[in-house]
Image 1 (cartoon, rainbow, N blue to C red):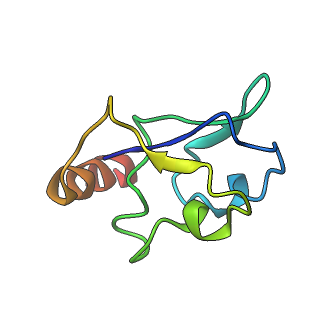
Image 2: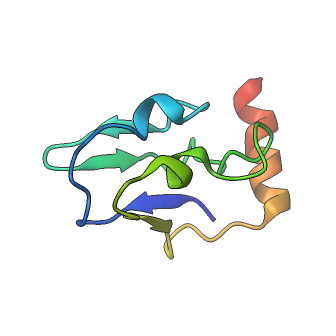
Length: 81
């Protein structure tokens, strides 16, 4: 399942450089995650790095983009090209 950043985001930006897929960018009011690029760090790390560094725990599973670990791995393989 891709991740998303909810409206509790304080726009601190610590998550953006942690994303190995460049899926996180600054939005109008809060940071946003591109679900087409988010693999929850599958293929890179054991845990989602953005979740680990977020000081307000605003990065959660995106219910609109449910994916299995296998689907996330396949997305990782496609992204790394």
